[in-house]
Length: 273
Image (cartoon, rainbow, N blue to C red; front, top):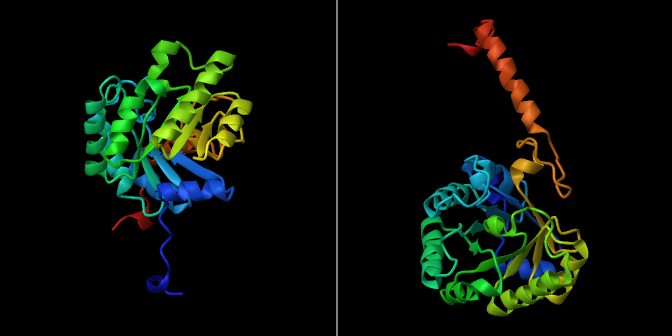
């Protein structure tokens, strides 16, 4: 079949997410923050790409997700969207752009949608941010919720340990999940919570759940691409499976390049004009 006759892959939408849950098809999601990586991730058949505020850690070197700004998130999302033809592109609303101010939340979400062409936004929290969720949804902007370990609240928790192990917090999480579903969110991320709790939430909701450190009973999984590819080093939580160890491979390749330059082995006669 010629390239001209090939059928383009069907675009994944928020509606597709619901269809995938109904037929029991797991949803695969990874992060991307730049054009080159997003092009590879999308081309490999990923269902959804999260332009996460984890860019604050992975791309900028901060200890938390808090410092990244809305302008920076928009820049990353623009870069990713230019590379993607199939995957659903979801963008995090960064810290300080929605908490406690629903008008600001709507303005932030509108900027992301208008300036990046993203398909949806993601927002952390439950009942306490309901007003912001409802205002954003009223503008026709799809929202992916996020419960459990919410990194933007790290100073409140004081630790990245597993959340909702105690009954009271677990029941609040279940309640918040139903609140987000009722408000109109199309999916919910469940981060670093007991697998049994994540499975319970998944069974109770009609919208998909995306797990990270929440066991295999969720409707899908998300990981930070730099973690699963082994580009990051020294970060090894239980839930992370490294599919490659690119930190070592890239480091060795660069060392070889340095040696070749120093020894006048690069470029050779075939590599010059």
